[in-house]
Amino acid sequence: MKDQIVFKFPDKSFYYEEDFCVGENNYEAYKLVKEWPNWSFKGINIYGPKKSGKSYLTKIFSDKTNSKIFDGRNINKDNLDFIINQKILIIEDIELFNDEVFFQTILNDFISKNKFIYLTSNKLAGSISFQLKDLISRLNSLAVVAITNPSDDLFYQILTKMLSDKQINITTKEVNFILKNIERSYHAASKFVKNLDELSLMYKKKINIKIINLALADIS
Image 1 (cartoon, rainbow, N blue to C red):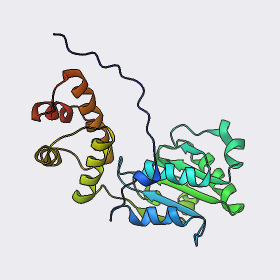
Image 2 (image 1 turned 120 degrees about the vertical axis):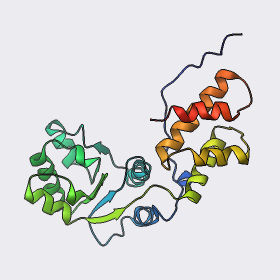
Image 3 (image 1 turned 180 degrees about the horizontal axis):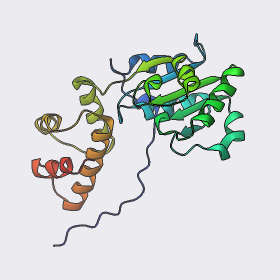
Image 4 (image 1 turned 180 degrees about the vertical axis):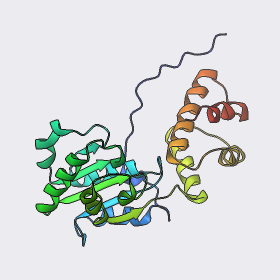
């Protein structure tokens, strides 16, 4: 009998605050998002490794403030009027900005109007290799909070919740096997569970270590 065909529809991500797993690695950042607008500052840089949960937290902040999220790799001068009319500036992956003068112009506008700024990056904003000294100075003036990849306990919560959301039932032994063989990141957990779900549909059989290994092998 031929393998079942799995139709791959676009993967929609839903970022619900009640589903966000809080641990030592992200508590300070999550606390600040919850406390907005009662901040003692107007600008913040949340930084940490790729797939550590920054985008999830940014989406929670965006929903809370009803604000648009801009992407550092795509933002450009064509967006200027739209950007400066935002009540809050939210930009993800600022290290991908390729027009430093434009970036500084945006920051100066929001700072001069005493409006909120929320930036994310993979490393401390002030240490990114921008050339403009005034831009670096602006970035260094922001409050900073670091997020790290989840601890073992938090990652266990994240993984088991993702499996539960997909109604994937596996044994504790199999969960422990996964934990020993997977990168500790939100991205790896999400990709693994997606792979496992598709493979279980394809093979139409109870999940076992062989299928788990196949799902683990295709995480990138």
